[in-house]
Length: 288
Image (cartoon, rainbow, N blue to C red; front, side, top):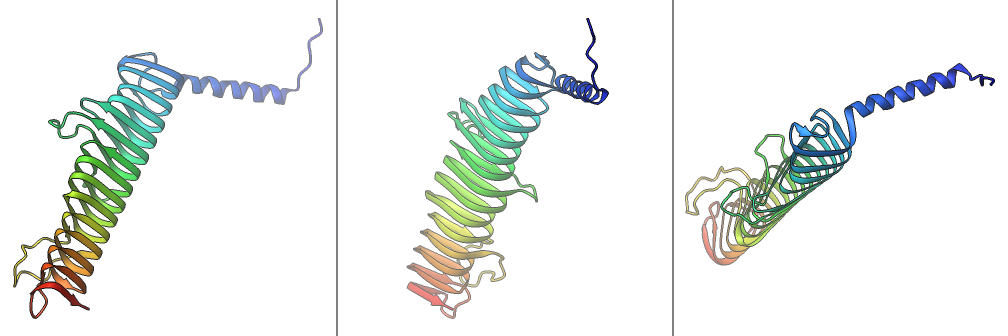
């Protein structure tokens, strides 16, 4: 038999590619099945590029693909979908976290996509909750959505909750909607909506607030002669039973409207503008 003579360059390339592939196989797996870390097919230092099944708990460095189980944990990055009966945890999420059960929590430091949590135990304060630090996308939950108090936290997108609280203490652009509870933000551009809730922007709000009670800016009790140097306010519209803003550049419509500085219109039974010569005026108060 004659040996086939091969050029050394293609042989070298083939050897190198084979070595790279085998090295990758040592640090990643297309399939992971876990009972409890470290009782799993491969240890936590492996990446999963494919499917992971957690019965009940699994942990790995990174995951690309589908993550299904009771408690899903990824130390670094998830690109894909996490679905659980209890909790999904990741440092960086691009895709979706979905959890549904008695007590459910989704957590990711950075979210690009969606977090959806349906918990049925209101006694546990984070049941049915989504928690993130930088969120670009949507959070939908039974009892609460939270963007942390970190100075660099931000929300770009939306928060929807059936009950409880939508909270974003960074820069927020988008909307917050809750049917019974509260919407809270530090600085927000967009919409806060809740027919039976308080809407609050601690610093400044630009857009539309609709709720039983609306607040924009530092809070001071509505009385004549109170501080007029409170920061924040609203550029836009407040509609509710009671509306408060440190400064109004726009319109307040409600039963009681109160502001410290007015550049716009108040429409309501009682209108209070602390910087006005006559600070309490019924029906309509306008100043530009």
